[in-house]
Image (cartoon, rainbow, N blue to C red; front, top):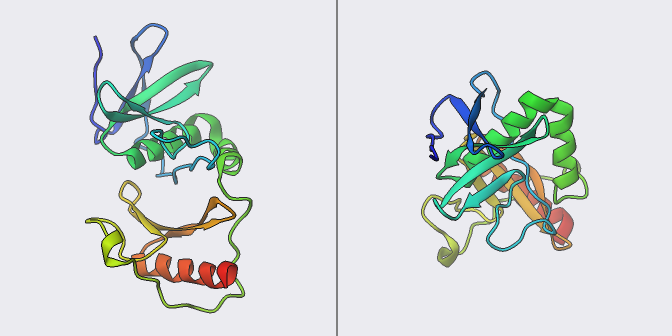
Length: 188
């Protein structure tokens, strides 16, 4: 019997794949929200998640996070939203493997070859999206994405065919200004 759990619950259960049953409880209630870990472009295939540790269960059409704990593959709940699964995966990595493992996973799987340095770039006006590219609930600015699960905006730019994160921001406009600064620096 397969059980599904709402991602709104504080306690997360994981399924021991070998036994096909619930075997433990992962409590992420005291784990601070962690930023999701983006896969590199080479790791991302069409129809798969853009985040490390996240897969789409085609049978249920829901996202799930999976992590290896003590050599066992464990699935953490089911999610309607890919980003929520990615945040919980990062939280589980933080809890069970520590900050160093989380940092290493971010560096290893990051699509960037290093941080986007904007120290010497003056403020730039945000770049609005064209009307045809705007979708309900998305940013009105180019290069800006909202992560509902962590309640932050991300600025991201494509350089040399790879996406590089510029940073996470409290406001959409802050993210848009830094995206515009990155465009000014790298594409001018």
